[in-house]
Image (cartoon, rainbow, N blue to C red; front, top):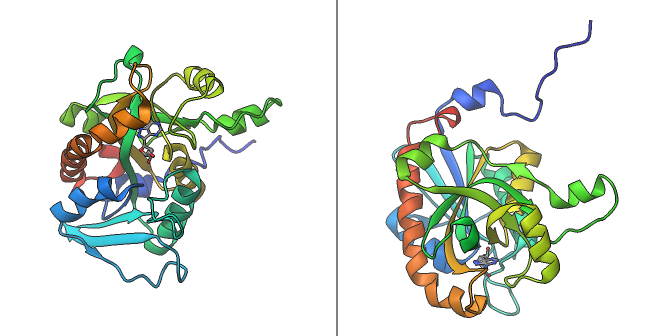
Length: 261
Ligand code: FMC
């Protein structure tokens, strides 16, 4: 008789039902991370678990019995700006998961939102699924690989408790949106758009760690303001909303297991 069909990719029952004790929080920009670092009084790690010389930054501490690690890709060594985007996000997440073995990953950050799909400036979303919009490979099956659609860990209780909007997140390596990207984002049925989420999801899937995405809207992609201008204008205020929500989410998570999120 054939063995029963299993879902090898789903987290094991043990992981689902054991209290969460360690959370890895990946945040791309220092401005987004700083309020949380201060709120939880985290200290910067002098890290031997990362390769020597990388700009990656890790803050750590304990809050309500949870080991919290906020990791950032850090400043580009030549240009001195935050290393946003998918490549650094996946590298830092990969190295951090191997070193820290977290029970849960949270990717927190800002995002563009589509007003046609109900997003407004300052809204904080939980992503239901994530996908890429700039990996177009028009060959059967490779097309699906390029899109890389992955579900986030189920977060019905967090979204209810915190009253958060839910939507699909689409990721690409550009802040602006080309017509090609726009078509892919529409095909992805995305409500929000960022530059890291689907890359973090790829690593989380690879290493079998549940992941959730908390994204605050800094700019309206289908509005009439230039994205970069609107993003910079709203970054500080929206980061405060992100900080509040991530803090509430961590309070909610404390003492719970993955299946209770
Ligand atoms: N499109 C793509 N990314 C972003 C965005 C938008 N309209 N608004 N905010 C972001 C996020 C990205 O994930 C980056 O980390 C950063 O803010 C912009 O460089």
